[in-house]
Every structure is written in C-alpha cells, then in structure tokens.
Length: 287
Image (cartoon, rainbow, N blue to C red; front, side):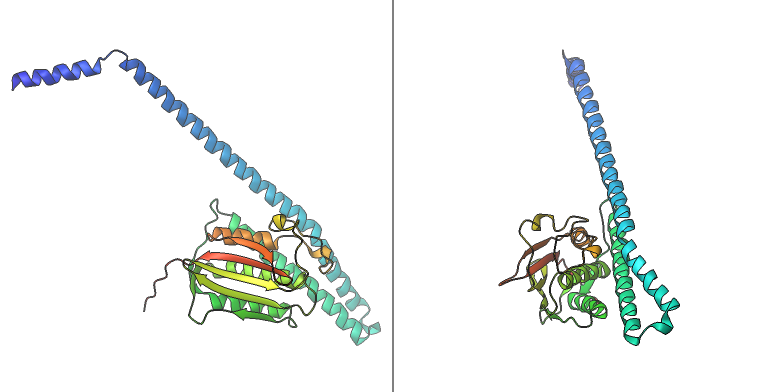
C-alpha cells in the first residue's frame, strides 16, 4: 500500500513538472484573456451600433413627423377658423365640406399616433419581445375590419376564414394594427370600388393571412423597398402629403417580433397581395 502511494506521488510530481508545461499554460491563459477581451469589445461595439441605429431611427422619425403633420394640422386650424369666423356667411354644403375635411385630417393624425405608439412599443425592448396569448384569428380580423369601416364606411372588405376555430399566439392589438395598416394601404393605393379581400389559412405550424386588392399593383422596382421606414412609392391614387411611410415598416416590425414573415406579391389578374405568417404554436385549452 505504501509503495503504491509513493508511485502516485511520483506520477503527480512528474506530470506537474513536465518540461514546457508552464509555457503552455501561460500561452493558453494569454489566448483566453485575449479572446475574452476581443469578444467583450465586439459585444460593446455591437451594442453601440444598435443604440446608434435606434437613435438615428427616432431622430429621423421625429423629423418626418414634425414635417408631415403640419399639413393636416394647418388644415384643421384653417377649417375651424372659417367655421368660427364666417359661419353665418357659409352655406350648409360649405359647412359640411369643411367638417369633412377636418374629420379626414383628424383621422389621419389618429392613425399616425397609433403607428407611432406601436413603433415605440416594438422598439422599446432590445429583442422586441411581445407578450403573446392564444387569440381567435377571426375575432382579431373582424375587429380590424370594423375599425377600418368606421373610417371608410363606403368600403367593403371581404373576409374568408376556416370553419374551425383558429387560435393563434399573438398580441391582438399589434396584429390588429398590422391588419388595419394593410387594409388602409389597399384603400389608399387603389381606385374607388376596388375589391379588398382578407384570406386566412393554416398549414402545419404556420398561420397565413393575406390582404389583397385588384388595384393598379406595385411596380417591381419598388417592391424591395416597400417595407423600409419612410418609404412611400409614387402613386397618383394617394395624396402624397399623407405618405409618411410608417405603415408597412411597422407591419414588418410587428410580424418579425412575433417570429413571422411578411411579403408582397402581384395579385392575378391585377392588384397586390400582402401576406404575413405567424407561428401557430401549441395552444392548451383549460376548462
């Protein structure tokens, strides 16, 4: 027993004093320290880059909003001033026209504020996490259509959903905002009387929602930039004064934060189709 212990001691002693071991240890330690330093510097650089991009986005957003909201605000102030100062001289039709103009400008400002709030909510978290809960897709779509109908009572939106209940993990307010933006986009960029349709389907682990129209469509050269913030393609149907370019960019941010994708394609025989997908996930029902 004693001899065996001496062997172990000698082996330990020999292993610890192998020639070159201290040098190898120092080299490995140096490499580890340098690797950790490089990794830490890379993380800091990436964090600074993301923060700079976020600050630039908010600065651009502030400049764009400050510039573009002046037109509707000026219109609201001008119309109300006329109503207050010249009401007796106005005909009933002139009063109604001023009220309609004021209402349109106010509705546009409301939509801009809603988009801005959603953008702030999505970009407030570094990983853009959203709180998801099982929601009936049909109810969220119905709410978005009803909300749009209040702004555009003369526009009909046709909805097609599966017969079975489709529960999808989502933030219902954000996904409703996506649908509202896509429907509004179809209304603004298509002539009066265009057909707008919403179709929903589920294939395996993905839920697909499409919003289509039969308008003039989107030129191929504009499609790669259609989801960029502040980008709005030239189209005679839409009032260029009201093309801030937040709607589709916000849609992409929201869908991406949900783990989905969004794309644009041509409708047949003419028009545009916006399609986004959401992970179906696993939904547990509790009685």
